[in-house]
Image (cartoon, rainbow, N blue to C red):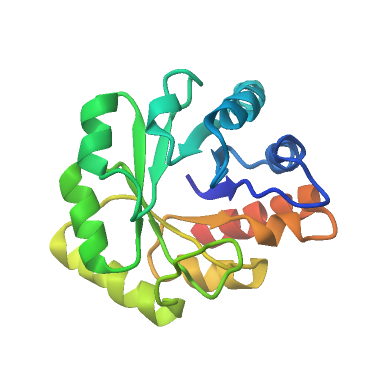
Length: 209
């Protein structure tokens, strides 16, 4: 769970190529995020990404599309604040699938935990172009405060930081107590996506020692 790659279509890379580079660089968790895309297209690309993830022994998570999780043999689904409630997804999928929930506040985490989420995507760290309906940016202080409240409340769910994060931020963000980092632009806009993935994984591993 330490590094999650969130797909994002760019002029430079297809969904498949981007996921392939991140996996080749050592990432073992890919979330296929295709907002406002017809289900047939999600299925077509999802089949390719699922196969790729299996080759690398990586987790394959779908963003939003609870109804396609079984068909694509995904490991689970990630739900935004405006998507299906976690409790409803859990009812449909049962206990064997991973369910992630987006959070911007401690109350969001509490709700996700109470409804049966397996992990939390907490953000945004800073302003990011890839997210619409942006919640207030958290910054390091926001993460510190929220993680402290989680500890005090006995909530031990893995929390992954997301939103405009770059390699230079990773060490400081992990120091707040979050479990992992989710990246999209920082990898796709790098001069060499594969090398940048390796570099960030090295920073994470060094910080966790």
